[in-house]
Length: 544
Image (tube, rainbow, N blue to C red; front, side):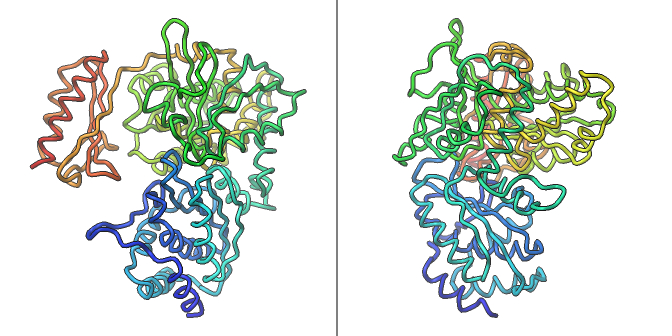
């Protein structure tokens, strides 16, 4: 084959690091993510697969993002983005895993050619890959390995250098829709800012935003990108006062350190620096700016967090109201997609108060995104703050073509069309989601306290349990029940029955030899006690 010698020579420059016997590099929801010193050979091989993927997709551009999101600075990761900005097709995750685990360079070339044959890929056809990276120092070495793979496979490529993950997803979709009626936007980083800024102004409609919003950027790529975006908002149209903090990207060792969305969610407290003043509206991005967490300190009751469940219910509530005002209620199916980790109070609020359908999926954004696509308007957020809202082509057409019967109906249709442009349709985007939240709060004239009053979270607890073999634990019902080991779920059910408003589930970790136990109950004491009892059950079955 024409590429064989080039691939073989380049592969020797980027050798794969052997793992311990019995261990494999595995492509998951986050792609390959681990210590950065293990990733050079992995990234080279991902480059080979991305070239195959582009050729399989009729030479459409494929994206590759190099990031480890909310992980410490010593880690990194590499993942593939499909043509419409969505995550890699699930069947290809298995191919990525196989290619990366090829034991020798020669085996790698053989498998590369076999995949091309089996998948009927013409290796002489054009291929295009676009890529970006976050601020980690290891990123430059990894993109060098990626570019080597693309040159060896004679693929066209574009290096967008430093980007947030959602910006890379945007650029992939914009590239593949350029010049057609479904154009997603201008193919440039500036095009991303212009699209969001224009949609933000249209959605706000001169409404006032009260006070300053403080944004903690986790000392990651979101800091400089948010500051750049703010230059695109015309001050005469929207007075949006933003204070950007934790935006130091010159000291990579402090990336995600005691700050960022993951810190706020897991520690249930604000970052220590800068000290949060009572009443100040604040939100946090994570290191690659695809997660969002809102919070403030109430002068009376202390810290209050508005996580992905809260953002989801806020978006669903507002969009549902707009759909009704627009006269589209009978034409649009609106749904909310959650995981088992969503607080039970949020599910009750959405189903009983908002009267909207809720579907639970296994953990992982790829699962939520897929189910959300089944609705005319699908809202999905994981509790960690990663999520978005998807609008179907039929919904977008209805916003544009429905003849308004009143000024109020026109206002609702215009706002829906603006929201569809404002919300990143490809993936969860902290910057885009933050703008959505600000629009909704301005329309409703709500403070964060008003938002928080919509429902009261059930007390909950998450416990990590080390086990002898995590593979003993199999789940069903969107990971809410154990099918194996036999007898374990019956014991969990027995404990749950002892508490009011209680539920609990256990699932194996995707990365560690451990299980996660989640519990909820009417009081904090009962939630903690239930978690401990279920953890004891898991520990006992895990040691058998």
